[in-house]
Image (cartoon, rainbow, N blue to C red; front, side, top):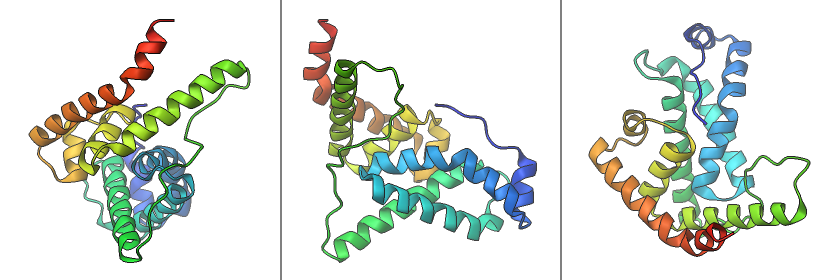
Length: 191
């Protein structure tokens, strides 16, 4: 899911208040940011709210985007902070974030056989449950590296963690995910 950055001219226009340019930014990064947030909170409705908040903050603070920072890195950093603040607020309010959202973000073909759709749903749910079981640092690095194909340097800019820590967290996250998914994978590999 790697993607090209939006043209610097579009970012410059958005910084100057061009709403059409910001709309292009939203259209380009809205879905990847929503997907990233969903991987962290595993609740579609909450993810949509937090993605909206992410872009509200980005719009408000676009003038503060440093020229040496990639727009996607900056947006993912804002998204991570929005998710953290939401979790803190939920703990303050003694609320729990729903982790068993039945639907996940996935693209479906209109021509999927019912048994294949059921297996896809089961695998998606299994992966999401395994992802949610990871601690926050591992979940963030796994999501950014595997699902969003970010470099370690970009992830470091987003999280503030060293590349060494990120590599260790990713290695441990992969081991945990493999362990949690092994019952499913051993059945599917026997087909």
